[in-house]
Length: 423
Image 1 (cartoon, rainbow, N blue to C red):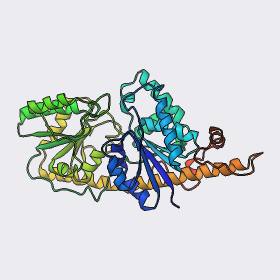
Image 2 (cartoon, helix red, strand yellow):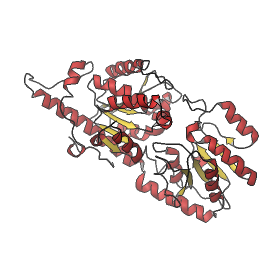
Image 3 (tube, helix red, strand yellow):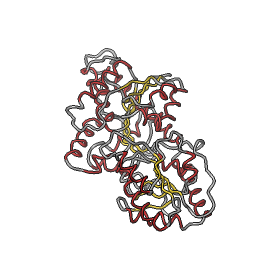
């Protein structure tokens, strides 16, 4: 039966680049799909796909929860207007304020922790505030997906979610047909590519430092950065700094490019020295195309690579160790690089196929809807109640609260066979 499904993120860019496969699947089965995010250059693309697009104001760099009350109001107003039957939240602020807004209207929720971000990387008072917000908001979500086991364990151990709420999916997955294996260049490795937004937390400074030293040893090596400048993020790297790296000859900056496949195909190795990730899509795409990977031994990255088999792991925040691992790739024959790349492709086929992720979300949607229907039915049998609650658009907060008085179903007792922890 067709439904109205809403997806919310802190950018339209994210929804288009990481959730297009799920959106297409929902649309193809006849669902009405609404997307909520601050407007950016990817809004027309979401409309072209068939989505109803809502421009939802959000201060992505703000850290004041009092000011972010406005975000809750924006979400609540939008959800009342759209009338979604279920909402899927991605990234931090939609997970907190979108969840609280949906909860106030009695709308079923599926949340996804896409990564822990600066607040968890740097600690301090901000981390305490963010954890408190997560704890309050996520207790109302019947399903919270994580993209790696480290993040899941951290949230459970800190009491931010209950174990029975938690599920794990392999990131956003990778489209194995679109990202097909590319031929391996003959001769020694020369081109090393980093695909990411220009953020310090992606390890871009370490990549540039490693590039400087390695190019002094071998001027024929090329180090390329591909990704967006001017990101609304506290760790964003200024354009002037990137331009200075280009002028000194350390790196090439390719800018922001819609189709990364030609550049991955041209690279001998793809590098991502990130400090922490959910599951980095760029590494999934690189491995699917048969490219060896050098990345950090941190949550989110280490799960993508079998060290010494599909790529190499280095220490985080350590340009010297990163250079050692890149140098190891330059010492391999083309046959050795090809074997490493094909092993990576096989790993993507086994563990990171986009279809695994889409199936997990479809099951979670049915689980969320089924559990809500079961609670409404049970509430209708409470003393003094003659009919089920009608959680229509505009339902009062009092009605919403009454719908949440019953225990949430354990995943093994899902109303409709919902996704398991390893869906």
